[in-house]
Image 1 (cartoon, one colour):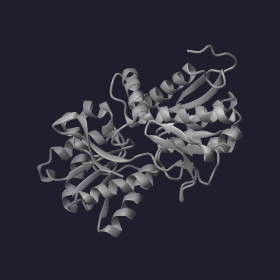
Image 2: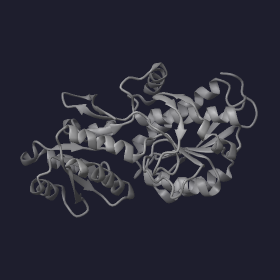
Image 3: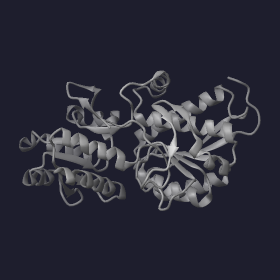
Image 4: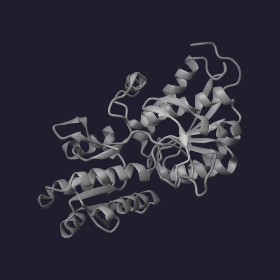
Length: 361
C-alpha cells in the first residue's frame, strides 16, 4: 500500500445493517463497497489522499436515511453511495437532490427514485420496470399466464404489480392481487385454488410473511403444480435457505449478473468470498462497482460536488459485470446505467447451493 497523506476524501455510505432492514443484503453491499475502497487506497487513493467510507445504517427506515443524508452532507462528504431498499433510497435521493450532494445509488430499483429529473443522482441497478418485465417474459415463456401476487402495502410492491400487469395483459396474462394483511397463509392457499393461478409471486417482506406462505403452499397438495416466484430476490441469500431448506429451492428470482464473469469480476468474486465467508450475491458486486465509479470520477473531476454530479454523462468505467455508462432513459428521473445484465435464476432443488439460470434479459 502506498503512503497516503492529507485529509481523507469522504464518501457517505447508506446501508441496511439492522432489522427491519434486510441486514444480509446490507452486509453484502457493504462488503463490496469496503473491498473496492481498500483497493483504491492500495493503488494510491484519490490523488494521494485516502478514500474514507462514512457508514450509516438505514435499517430500512426512510426518515432515518433522510436524516443520515443531512448529517453526512454536514460532515463534508464528496458524495453518497449505497442503499438497497427502494423506498429508503427514494427518501435519500430526495434529500441529496435538495442539498446538492451527488448520490450514486447501488441497488434500489424503483423507477421513480426522484419525483422530478435530477442531475445529482445516478443509479447502477436496473430500473424495476426493466428487470420485472424480463421476469414477466420468463413467466410467459414457462407457460404461466394466470399470475397471483401476494402483496403488502408499499410503493415498491405496488409498482412491481403494475409493471407485471402492464406487460402481461397485452400478451394474454392476468394478475390477481392477494392481500397478505387480510389473508392467513392457509386462506391464501384457498384463494389460489379458487382463482386457478398457475404462479404465485411473493411481493412481500422476508422472513415474514414470505416464509410461512412458502411453507403453506408447499404443504398444500392442491397447489403441487403452482410455480412460486420471488422477483425481488429473497432466495439469493443464505438466510432464505436456512429458513426454508428444500422448500426454498425452485423459486425463481431476479439477479443482476452476467452468465459468465470476466477476469475483473472473477478476481473481485474471489476477494468477496473471502471477506464474506460465502458466495457473494449480485448486491456485493453492485457495492464494488459503486466505489469503482466514484473513485474514477473523483480522480478525473476532483472532489467538488457539482463537478461530480456533472460528470455522470461522461463516465466510462470497467465494472465487475461489464462497462458502466450512464444515460437519460425515458421514464427514469435519474442518470441510469442501461443496463446491468439481468437474469432469472433459482436454487436447484437437487442441490440448493447451486443456482440455475432460467432466463436472461
